[in-house]
Each structure stands twice: as structure tokens, then as C-alpha cells.
Length: 171
Image (cartoon, rainbow, N blue to C red):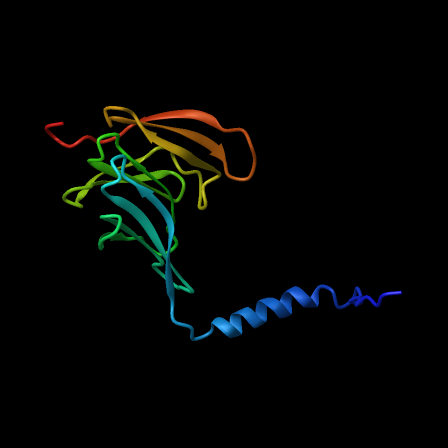
């Protein structure tokens, strides 16, 4: 007969709380650590765009970067407190890159100059956090539109979407 350790039912809810408290104590005073939360190479493989997240963090925790895959990348933006980046999409020619912010807004950058090239809400947000979110962002071949899935946040039922994006003068 083997012995088994059984937690009395009255104490069972206490265990997750104790674990959470231990994690908070262990992280208290810890220096923030950054990691690439989202990353995407350009179509040619000559550049990379990524969103970096600092944890633990209060305030502005996410920054957006563009650069060479094996080299130093430049930070192009630090997101406002509470904003997150969930996807990255490149145009087919690799000239522009878009970061999907908070599941509904594209922030587009020129990959060569690293300057902002536009911003567009692909769907209109319906609260904070929005009830619907965008997934699967893909630029059209000419870079003038994006296709995406418009999805409920907490359940299935996505529908196809199409949105025009700003195009720099002269393109």
C-alpha cells in the first residue's frame, strides 16, 4: 500500500494563494528582464522586427524594434502603459512593417528609415480591452491593404476583414 499526501479540502484554496504570495516575494525588488515576446523576419530575411516586453514591470512595459537579424536593432517606439503588441506583419517588398497593438490598431513603420509610416484602427475598439480582436494580419501584394480575421476575444466565430492602410507619398 502506498502512502499518498492529501490536502484537506478546507486548506486547498489556500495553496494557490500561498504560491502566488511566494512568487510576489521572490520577484519583489527583482530587476526587470526583457524578452522578445513577438518577432518576425522580413520576407528577404535581411531584417527583423520584434516587440520586447519587460517583466516584472509597472508602466510602459513594451517596446518595438526594427533591425538586422544578427545585429543591433533600433527601438522605434515604447508603448504607453497598458498597451501590448500581439502580431507583426511585413509588406511583401520588406519596405514597411506593421505592429498590431492591443488587438485592433496597426502602427506602421518604414523599415529603412525607421520612421512612422501610418497608423490605422483595423477594427473599431469596443471597450478596454476590446470585445473583438484582430488576428492573422497579412499585407496585400502591393502593401495598400491588409487582410485579417476579426475575432471575438473569448470565443470562436471569426470573420474575414479587409482594411486600407496609409501608403507613403510616391509609392
